[in-house]
Length: 304
Image 1 (cartoon, helix red, strand yellow):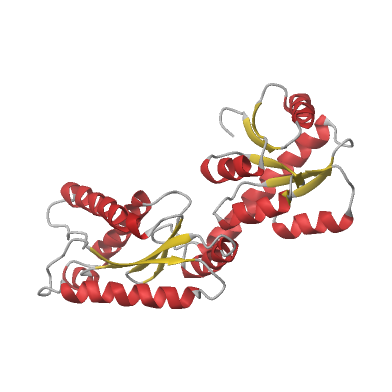
Image 2 (tube, one colour):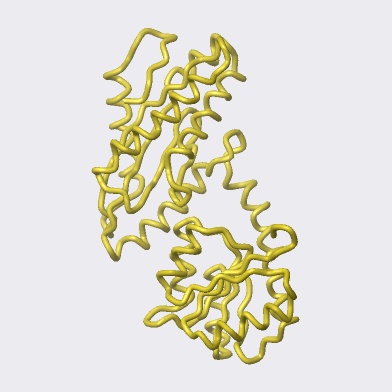
């Protein structure tokens, strides 16, 4: 919420239902809301994964697919927006399916009042806030604020399963911060921690918000980017290098230079693709990169 205004996304393929829902929002929130309307499943997925909203209202029936299908894919793509499902039928099985998919509530069209919708949105947002706090404790790397290994393995596996149908081309990058042990031993662990934080920021800046960026532990990071081809690899790594150069140019005198070795693997999602195998292969590519650029202890190299 910004300035007391609730930002709502409505994914609804019927214009009459859009107008009705907009009027119910006005009844419940007065002027303290904005509503963006996506009339197709594809448009809804784009808005959910690219824009930020306080809550999303998803129609259950969206052509040949359902709002639950849309919710599954949006979650796999990193969408954390609280969702309320709207449907024209009162079906307990559908209700439970929506809850299991991650919807905060399930409302039946024609029975919803402005007050009821306002209350459902308020409760969904508060429930989401509490769940995010709990999730952050177990799925976030405390030092860098990135996803931790547990979160990455779960979210990446879900995303690859969804991408199987189209055989989407993906990019997996395994990254290692060069010289971390030397920095810890010669300057201190505070300097080493600073290198890890700066590496995390460089990786986040080089990739899209919807890409999965995680710290696997120690000096190792991993990134999964879908919709990225082999041809994109060099441009992505060049952007990462730019971020590293900017960091090194602005670093305090005496601070160790940031250097990251990477292993980049392009692959097509499919039923035979195993996440652990992909990570192992990208890790091996990273080690090969590091070995070809090895220098005497204390020298910090740039990304290849």
